[in-house]
Every structure is written in C-alpha cells, then in structure tokens.
Amino acid sequence: MAFALQLHESKGQVLIIDDDARVRTVLHHRLEREGYEVVEAENGDQAIDIMKHGDHALTIDLILCDIRMPGSSGIEVIQHFNAQFPSIPIIVLTGYPDMDLAITLLKLGVSDYLVKPVERDALVAAVNKAVSEREVFAHI
Figure (spheres, rainbow, N blue to C red):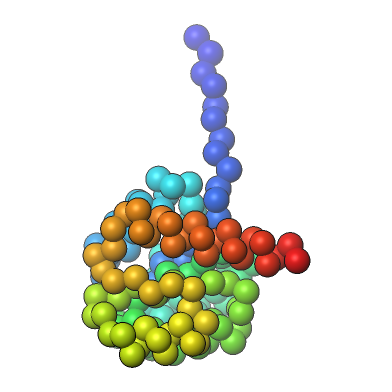
C-alpha cells in the first residue's frame, strides 16, 4: 500500500501576541487550519524578544496583537514594530472596543481592528487581506 505525502505550502507566518492562553490557542488553531504557521507570545516583551532572535524578523508576515496586556501595552508594542518592521502588517485584537482607540490605531498604521470574540470568517478574511496586501507591496 502506497502512502502519498501531501505537503501544503504555508500561506505565511503569523505572530499572535495575547496574554490569554485560551485566546492564543483558539487563534492558533483557526489560522493553522487556514494554512498559516503560527508563533505565539504571551505579552509584548516576549514578542519583541521573539522578533530579535532567529529569523522571525524575516519570516513573520503578520502580527495579531492584543491591546491590554501586562508589561508593555499593545500600543507600545505596535509602535515598536511599526518602527522596526514597517513592512509587517498588524491587526489589533481587543476585548474592549473603543472607537477613539480604533481611530488612533488606524492612524498609526494598523491594518485592521477586531473585537474579541472575533468570528472565524472575519478573522480569516482580515488575515488573508493583510498578508496578500503585504505580498503585493513586497513585489513592487
């Protein structure tokens, strides 16, 4: 009996930054099912360390970032990543919707602003859009 090995090409690599392990797990599984590779960080400081080591700065295609976390706030982390890695799109995930904050974040260059619990289709659509737009700009 022959077995066929199917290798699926990754759609990209996503860094999830959220202090809630359950949220990270749910997002991780949703995105893996869609063909993404996932790296997790439980806070902004850990995410910054992840990006400093190995080749993550070259392989991460998208950052999903919570806003309210212990240590560095999501806004500080977003500002850091925008300064250090301006070509990597960032999508904000928050459990505390705030229209003024959303506007501020969008002005900072955030790709999208999603409210938890985010519906699977909305998450996938936002991630696919941000990654595909990054790929388009990378080839210009």
